[in-house]
Length: 96
Image 1 (cartoon, one colour):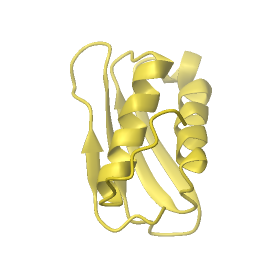
Image 2: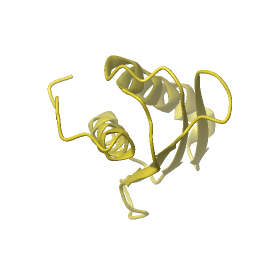
Image 3: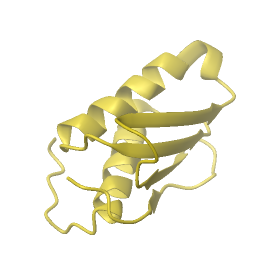
Image 4: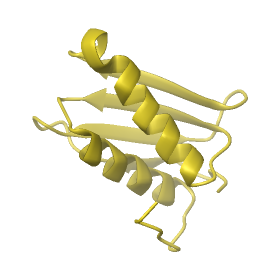
C-alpha cells in the first residue's frame, strides 16, 4: 500500500492511542512514540505498529503515535484504520 495523504485514527482518551500516518520523509517505516509507559512497553508498542504496517504492505511511512495506555488490540485497530485512511483505500482487510 502506498501512503498518499495523512491518515489519523484514535483519540487522546485513557486506554486509547492516537495514530498519525503520513508520507515518508526518508526510507522505510519510521515510528515516533509518545507514551508515559514507553520505558516499560515502548519496544512492544513499536513492534505492534511496525508489524501491522508491514502486514498491510506498507514499506515506507512516517508513523506518529501518542499512547494513553492502549492494549495491543486497540493499537492494531488504530494503526490499520490510519493506514487505510492515508492510502485512501476502501479495500479493507481487517483479519490481517
